[in-house]
Each structure stands twice: as C-alpha cells, then as structure tokens.
Length: 324
Figure 1: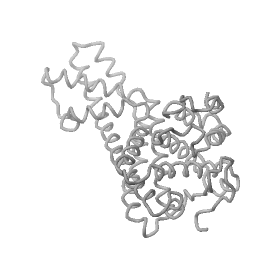
Figure 2: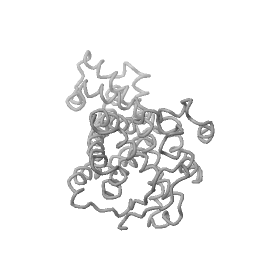
Figure 3: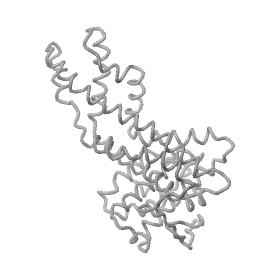
Figure 4: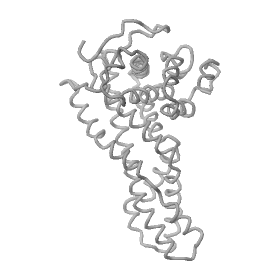
C-alpha cells in the first residue's frame, strides 16, 4: 500500500479507481530523483516569491504626485526611483514563471510517458505527483495575490511610459540594463493576464501536447483528470482527509483540484464541463461549496473566469447554476 491507498469504489460516472496521494510525506524513489531534483530546485524559491508579492505595496502615491505635477523634476525623480526597484521585483516574478514552465514540462514528460498509464505513474511516482501539485498550489496562490493588487499593472505601465519619455529627456537609465525593451514587452504580456501563472501553465501544457505528437493527448488529459479525482476523494472522504496532519493540506488539495480542472479544460478538445469529461465537475464543485465561503470564493472564481469551456452549449445547466 505504501503512501497510496486505493479507493475501491468508483464514482457514479464510472471514472475508474481513485487514489489517496500522500501530499505531506511522499519521498522520491531512485527513478524519480533526477526530475525531482530539477523541480525542487525551482520550487524552493516559490515561498519567497509569494512573500515578496504579498509585501508588494506599489508606488501609487509617488506616481500620482508625478502625474499631477509634470514640471516638478524632484517629484518625477521620486516616482522613477520608487518604481525602478519594483520593476526589478516584477522581473524576478516573470523569470520565475519561465522556470516553472520548464519544471512543469519535465513533470508532464515523466508522468505521461509509456509504457505506464498516467494512473500507474501517479501510483508509482508519488513524489513527482506531489511536485506537480505544489506547482498548481503555488500558481493559484500567486494569481489570487496578483488579482488583488492593481498596483502591479499601474507601476509597470508608468515604467514603460516613462522609459519612452526618458529616451528623449536623456534621464539616467541604468534600469534598462535590467529590463530592456524586449523584456518589458514580454513582461507586459504576462502581467496583462488576470491570472498570469495559470496562463503560463496552460500554455506550457498545451505546447507539451503539441510538441509530443506521438504521445496520445489522453495521456496528458488522463493525468490531469486522475489528479482531480484524487483530490476530490481526499476532500469528500473523512477517512482520508483525517489522515492529514495539517489543516493546510485540505486547502492545498482544493487548489490543486481547481488547478488541474483548469488545465484539463484548456488542453482537452471539448473541455472539463461536457458530459463525456472524465472529471466529475458536479462532485468537485459540491466539495468546494461545502467549505467556508471565504476560503473558496477565489477558487470558485477561478473556475468561473479562467476556464475555457464553461459557457459552451455542452455544459449542463446544473453545472452552470452551481457556479453562479
């Protein structure tokens, strides 16, 4: 049995066996270690990224003062000097998204490759499944913080406008060595997204599928749907949820469940909400709605606003009603 307990019953949609994954204690086997080491090197920076984002206050007042007093050179310099370190911080977040994208592709490669099925992979390679879950958990936390912080886009917009003016004014532009025009363009596209990290993962998963034409798309979508099923079972079954030593693990499971649903919905040709979907959407939404509203509103909003197929005709009225 190890860290994995099979649930012997299938869901009413006959989605096959569900699993209990030990998100708290799974350790890499020798076969997993190389990829696990690559991914953990990225994930070790995730908490400091979140702490940095949470502490991001922006330069709103300085920018307003500068805009309202365009001829006051001191106020222009004060705003510029406030914004530049923030832009360097935003660059760090953006560069982390690129590292996360590579880490996700490495995990997908390991968890979908023949001869094993995705379910067998998740069973055998729990430490990699845990890392995949940690990427999703980080992603939803990052995007929740970003959505609540309009200062990020305001600061970056001011930076770009000022850089083009400064070329004319010949202001000191050391920052351009850090964030040149090409980098600023890429960062601008990233921060224009409501949920930039989820968009990064969706693009990474979609490109993984298109880059691996010999690998059936089902290998990838089944990996995602199995993970969603795993999380749902852990959340709705007291016998399993009681095994966790930390209450935080329940929130972890909810974020991971929502994250894999969104990825599945972006990668699967007809998405997560149609009747043929391998994800029990009604069951997943029901599990979320049984939690305190404050803790899950951001996750329900992620399903409402960052999925691709929710408003398709094939989505049942009941599922739509549950998310209203």
